[in-house]
Length: 387
Ligand SMILES: *Cc1c(COP(=O)(O)O)cnc(C)c1O
Image (cartoon, rainbow, N blue to C red; front, side, top):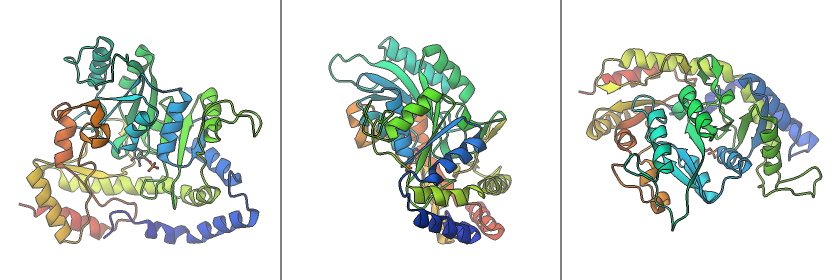
């Protein structure tokens, strides 16, 4: 059994992938070839977003978005400590400061009430309201924006967080690396924040055969800035540079591969939902917490993650599954505020209890659209036989 099965998917569309790759080799436009804008159009239509800007990775999508807002030293960006490191890395990379905000214990996404506390703590320089990062000297920290993460494919609480962003004049970026195609109260989640950033890393719900990413926005000015930043800060002419940018382009070959895969994507989301429903139906009532999907949210199930009661229970579940040749994964074993990379922020163990507790108890089951029913049953049986 595979945790993720890219071969099963490839088998279905291998001809189309080969054809699309051959087309690129024939036309030879390896950089920003026609497939790139074709993919941007296709995905923006699917997500009902006006503008899409393809780029080299999910990390670059986040980086370019922060750059489009001119983020730099002295800026505070609120985000979750329970995510992949890239979400906060890009903040540090620009010299800005991540201000971590703990997650909701049921959705694992950033908690709007705590976000309010964190903003208030920062504005009043009062860390007794909410843990704050250490900053060098007397540098004042200015609240500038929020990056929420739609963890495991489940959208963040966009209504609550969107109104906080509006009230506090903060930009809202959605890290949609795991959640492309997810829905929030009848809308595609990627259409809601100021910019949504996704990743086409192979194991993501929509993955290419290398690295890739995309930004989505309904703001035409932001879209132009993102396109400029993607190309070294290009102005109207090739050698006219109007801002600092990066080489953040998506390869034409990856776009060609994604075009073949994009046709399957809606169906694959449905298949993932069936598997998640099946897992949840059979695991409900066991001594573990099954994923909580709030009303009118639709996950794309990048991961199906369970919470064991204790760290020891998790170890026992994993051993049991692995003994039955069922692969598992832990996302994420260490929250970001305890990572060496963010040591300079001087956060302490205990600052974000929920993330810390989840990181000790969470584990993920095999999840991909082509997981056979028999495999699903084996996973379920192995977990049920636990104690
Ligand atoms: C994968 C991922 C990223 C980074 O995407 P890359 O394409 O690997 O750079 C960022 N945030 C989250 C939540 C991710 O899962």
